[in-house]
Length: 423
Image (cartoon, rainbow, N blue to C red; front, side, top):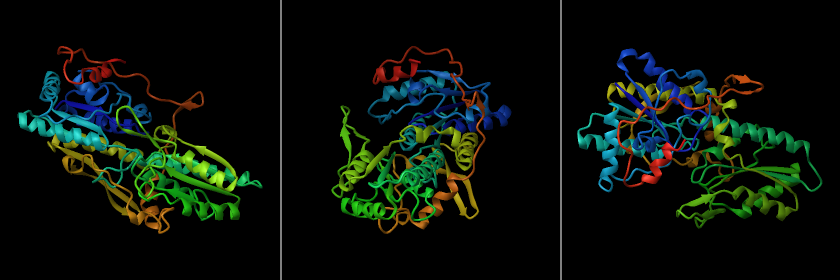
């Protein structure tokens, strides 16, 4: 069986660990696995016939490297009925390289690609097994107890908040001060919730957490902040970028030329509001890509799960489990136990798992004990970071590309597809 692996969507600190899991399992299966290729920039790389040979990769270094070494993309595959020629090209490339299984590593939209390609292959009678490998720091894939990438981002953010709290305690002043950290999360508050792990009691940061799942209540926020500033002299707030008012409008977002909303700045707006209301010092930070690329501080649990879903995906391919996702299932909290199970990709594609109401405290501005029980195991454990010259060692460059066997792609989305050939 010949495998084709691809990465898609936003990156995580452990997506390359899933790639290493795929390759490690393929090597362990010996003669049952033939060639293992990787697409350059996800589905676009397949359409462009821009493919890498994965033989000879150093899997230990690969698994410790953040980002995606094969490159990623955000491309929504249209229905086959709308663009049949696009699917003709896709299957022509797969056939030219005798690909038997496609392993697609991504989030909600990527699982829809798995479902669409799987269905198209069945309609065409093409012998292809499509497997989804989940990843997202947003932790919002349905059917998965947690998503590889989330635990490490959660660990980084909770650590940052705890360290900032030590700084806040050291720098109290007559005017008081606030610190606001804005985390990713347009529609879901999983990352914001993770920062609550930093607090061991009510005096530790974050004192307030604002979730997209809860309508932004300005009077309640200001009342809580005033109490904290009076009692402690400081206040730390986590803000998810996608918080919304009661009418559904975002606290801070702007329209883009492509018609999509661009989020960012909600934390700065909250910092301004509180500091101007109470005439206190304000400090604002947006970790942005830092929260998804901190491979020096990954969760050992998250890393193990990222490897495991990659290994399981290869096994599912050999078993012919077409159209499935290698999903993490929780078996117990204390001690934390988990395994990998197959989930139907079409049933979970493009769905968005929001933070359950039971994970949000009654006041709407903190995480409940049930939420803490869920979160705590996901950030557990540390891994050694190989370094050189005092800095982490990462895999650099890309494996060699294969010679193309087909004419260049022409047709719908030609310019977009060409992006997979530019570097």
